[in-house]
Image (cartoon, rainbow, N blue to C red; front, side, top):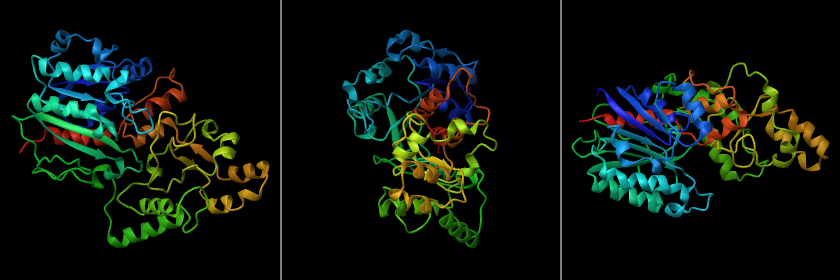
Length: 393
């Protein structure tokens, strides 16, 4: 597969570009397009030789798109019209305008691109925009497959459930049997099994006895078993324990920075500890899970992502059991013993699959970094889907 010309739409920090590189495809990104000044600064920093168009997609004339003569589209359209916590304006949301424009010009391109990969939030699959997308793909002669995938399916300890679609012109068959159902794992192909595997991410294969030993250790370390001491149900606690017992998933410590400089800036402030103590999702380095990091991480606390307990020898249950009877000063003293901190931007990038060479310009603040990462995607999943997209019988 030589010389694929790729257009990366809504390019953000370049997660799709990194996924393309990781897939090993012989391809070149001939244009990356995004309106975000901050995201473009990061993209330019990491891909200085890639043409970057800082313009809105709906403002690009058909003739200009034709001039790129591209074979593949990689895109992550704005998710706000479809997110479950938003207004769910769908196609009536102004932020969907560029995507609808793209669907309108796709049938009119002089050269129909062979391949398409799209990523969006869960919720897109039931949107009117998705219906328009499917109709457009069918009219243009594509066949496609839809997915709902989260990084734990590749052994990565971070929940980030996202909708994906891969499409290719019908002249090139998929290497697997497509279905009109939305898949929640990678299908088996004729060439290889694109399913959950530990070896792809460098996990050591081990015997059943070794698995049992690790599971026992995991249960003992993260979290404490059998007590509901925060605002979580017994079912939620059981789910977390089940995730931590899944030894096909790596531990968080594999993604943490070894020497975090200025770690104090990532410690939760006293006000947040007191106000949100009962709803924090706390994980230890030995855990095999973390909740989805959103663009509000580090600024807002509730529902924006897990926090890390650095004092691993402190039992969480012993801290929380006595909180109700204590004064604020005593509560703070107790909670502070856990040394709770935010994950650093680099650590979140690691969980998202960004390679070690990925960097953030000095002018990008920590808050801006969290916002960009919260809007990003998992590179490993993209790489796997591109591999799947390009495989043939």
